[in-house]
Image (cartoon, rainbow, N blue to C red; front, top):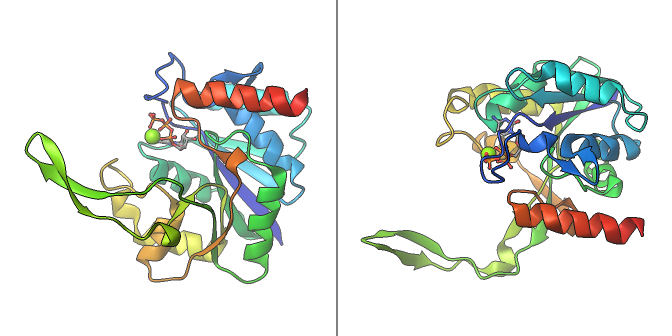
Length: 238
Ligand code: CTP
Ligand code: MG
């Protein structure tokens, strides 16, 4: 049996504000999506990758992957959709019957440690249907609602019971297929769509387990994150 990784890379990167999609923005000379693919492959726990590409860029992504000597496992590329959820569904449609485990990883997390990938796959293979890496939350988090020109605090959840979750998230393929199928009507619009795949599994009422995340798997959203990633790489390759 095999593990497929869906590598989501079809977003536009609005908050980064470059003139090209975020997954193609370079970090130390290589696009974010390539960093992520190399690390998925380096884990030794992933057998093949499906990349979701932005509009009109399937060929560009495919050339990028095919020309890289470090990926070394089969990579297929498909068109993404209007939301992350739709993109994952498009990738999932290419899963094969032998892919009993499916990971979903964001190209926006290019520095994911291979050990984290292994940890997630192991937890799924040990019998958990849905596994998510999570870290303790260090900020106190407030729940709010709009109140005139400000926001009113409606609650303060107990921080010790909160986790900030990352990718890769790992699933038994049949469970992830069922979760996307059941949640399919949410995929078309950003305000309805699930921001992670575990959320779709939770909506089924099925259990989702957390394994320890890793700070290095942080998400690149803004220029500051890109700068931080560059510092981290400098530090680890020095
Ligand atoms: N993604 C995707 N398809 C979409 C939207 C997002 O495959 N329609 C992917 C992104 O490429 C990214 C991951 O989902 O790897 C997480 O999304 P996010 O960080 O929000 O990236 P963007 O949507 O590109 O950024 P922004 O929200 O700032 O536009
Ligand atoms: Mg987005």
